[in-house]
Length: 400
Length: 143
Image 1 (cartoon, each protein chain N blue to C red):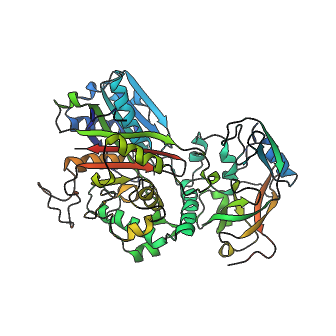
Image 2 (cartoon, one colour; image 1 turned 135 degrees about the vertical axis):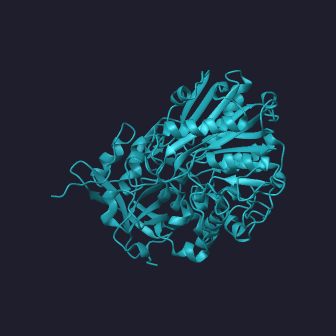
């Protein structure tokens, strides 16, 4: 299971400003992010012949963005679905290049997630735009219209079964905010304390507002190409060593029908992605975990095997996940504090971390002084991992 | 008469029998005729053995709270006047695989806890639609 063999790589990343009100169209945001990723790679946008994106609430079709950027595409694709899409599209881009469908593939996520269609918000658009089968008739009439309540339900059960506490979830939020304070792009740059967390507004018990991801306007983009093509480009490439592209577990649409609903599909994805990359958990220098809510970080650490089942809460409390811990998690601040770009911003961060080129407060060489530096020391191999109670997972192992 | 403004179920070919039974204040669940497993939510094929053959079966409506949340903020404006309210996963006594999402009514949110015994109750919200909810069983332990 080693088909990737580091033959494909990410050669460019870029993003727009993250804000609560961009005042721009998703078309404009997407084009800027792709243009920046191309510039970062040392490519003219017209050299990109494949363009893919994903959407859940808000997006813009690739052929529209391609027109803005002068591209002639041989492959474009817009796929529905949220958090596990970036990792999946990166893997699919590699497959598309292997099969000759395209040579240089751009991937983006663009949304006005705060000023436009709000995923977690009070609007009805999110509900009506979902294409998940007919099950909504068994949620919506009872008030389940958005993600926080469904994740809070899983969190409550996890707390009951394993003794996970609000304070442990709070430590995930505190870690995110601390890391984001070293990230000039981050929307929330003020660190918080446990007292701040405990005083934060209760949204849907057991979740406070600080347990929930941001809602953000913005876009991110990545460029994938072959290692051969990368030789003539600007940066040393970040190789795609392992991938799981949208694994879905049995009973995916209703994990409550599982014998144990706290079994999420990251468990299956974790072993698979590490085996494909030929690495062990000890080789992983940092992880980007899909943090739409604090509980998902706790769960993904368990499911991807960095701690035992049910031990995610204590694992966080023991301090492993900080910038100098043995398993740094989301040094950018993640979706909880940097921005909610549906996970794409976490993969962008991973690429920069592995290059050793994170955009923090350092001028020139990284100092590792945590008052202004968020670069992880000797970051060579990283994992970006998603595994959610909707029953799906994706993951990437990237290496310098 | 006030108009009911909350989202309503949209019965379809896989679910219309369920909602019709609800209107008669009965809870019915699909049972696979091949592997005999009860399943929720209604769907055209058995997720455990893939068979499309099934029959609807009446259940007691008795269950226990498996997990729950308390809404302190309305995500949908039509629920604003209900804040705080409880949404729960209720495991029916007939099968641990049958865990339904609904609201817990008839007690304070603070009284709800995992393991609490509940019974199905019915709310005729419009002339065409009845919703199933759950209320504490007689003698259910308040926390």
